[in-house]
Structures are given as structure tokens and as C-alpha cells.
Image 1 (tube, helix red, strand yellow):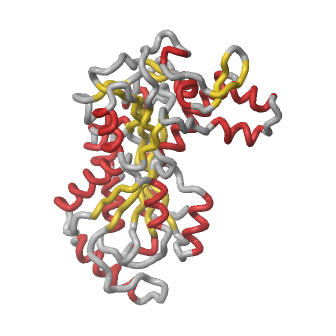
Image 2 (spheres, rainbow, N blue to C red):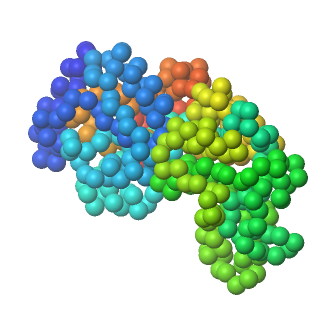
Length: 344
């Protein structure tokens, strides 16, 4: 039986339901969200269009938060079918979805990615960082001679003689990006704790919760710059600023090694091997979320999701691995979950 016939049958069944999406649906899958997941989703969408009797899915970027916001707008052909995310969906987003009738969501973990710190290939020798270095460079208050003070550092070498005597300038993911959350948790917060800044905040009268929030703040004097666009914008900023450091996904860096060099983090170089082993400290799972109400109504939606996480595509020898995705060792469980349409 062809995939086209399966979709037509499912569409007829769905049309009988009072809660189903209109049977006069568009005929292509629509996806939006994470700029980190974007290259993977684009590869899969193109291959899907070439190998199946369905139109090529439309894949857009915009960031994890923006994609999930669109996903939660409601059920119907005027809303997207899949949201890509470089972080797990938050409880408040699930609640927002539910308020708009999006009650059945399938969470799909596609694999893992690492967050890297990269700079101009011919720029200063930024080759090794620790979370403490990034915190000391970007936090509004840092520890100096045992006291928590306004950040006086203007050069990387001000607080670590092993780093270049270069002006501090970092281009970091904006707050709507899933990458920002991982950057904060595994780099900034870790550096805050390692330098003693968090302990000093609590000793100064802050509650532990307030200290944790304060640890995630970044300086606002122009040395830390939020990038709200995708990684191509960060790359453009690096191109224009020889002293700049940028935060990228591993896959993006690996596709731009002719322009960028990458630093180790806590002595570990980022690679698919060090991420898979858990040795590289700044890594995270990647997801997409499926609107179950659209399965059987939007042609090819389930087939696209199954194709995305198939061994041939998302397995260790698949094309996504060649672009930096670290295969999920529990991929078979994910495949079964999609086949059974299991919701969160």
C-alpha cells in the first residue's frame, strides 16, 4: 500500500471527528523553531520530499521559544505541525498549549548536540576555556581578591594569564533561544559556583533562589551581546570582530571550520565522541514536538516523524551524524513511541 493511500484513508477517518482539523487541509508538513535543529530538519525534509509521495515539508527557524509559541497557538491548518527545540518544552508552554486546545503532544528526542565557543580562525588564541573564565568575562559582578565587586575586567588576560590579552567581546544566544538555557546552566551558573560568587551572594544576604537567578545575569556594558537571530548572525559578528567569541552548536561549527576555530571547555575538545560519552561538559538533547491532532489530517506528518528518527537517518551511521548530531542510544524507544503515537 502506498503512503499516499494511507494518508488519504487517515484523512477520511479524521474528517468524521468533530474535533479533527478541517479536512480541507494543506498538503505539506510545516515545521518551525530551533536554529540548532534547523539544519537537521532541513536535511530530513529534503530527503523526505525526494523519497516519499508527499510534498517536501516547510522548515523555518526563529528559535525554540518562538517555535513552541507558534506550535501552541492552536489546532488547525493555519498552525504548525511540529516545533523544533534545543531544550525540553516548559510546563508553562504545555499550559499555554492546553489553553489553546493543543492537549496531545508527542515529544521526540532526536539526539544530542554540544555547545561550542569559537572565534576567528586567524584571531587571538582562544583555545581553552573553563566555565569560570566565561563567568569572569561576562558576569556583572565577579570575585576579586575575595570580594564580590562590579566586573572590572576588560581583557581576557585580566583574570587568567593563560588567555590572550584581547578585549572581551562575546556574542551569546538571545533569551528566546534554547541554546541560551544550556549556556546559562552549564557554563555561567557553573562558573558562578566555581569562582565562589554564588557563595558570596548568599553570605551577603541573598536567598539561594535569588543567588541562582543573579548568577545567570550578564553584563550590559556591550561586552556581552545577545544574538536573537540564528548562528549565521553570530558568524557575521565574528567575521566583523577579530576579538569576538561566539557560542555555536557543534554542527554549525563543523560546517564552518574554514572560518572558525574552537576552544576546549574544561580541557575537553567538543566532538561527537566526547559528547556521546558525556565527557564534554556543555551538551544537551535536541527535540521536536508533534501536534497529535494533526496526524492523519496533514498528509505525511507521521511518516515524516518516523523517517526523521529512523536508523538510516538519525542512527550513528546516518547523514545527521555526519553533520554533528550525536545519535541517541535510546533511538529504538523513540521510534516505538512515534509508531504508537504516545503523548506526553
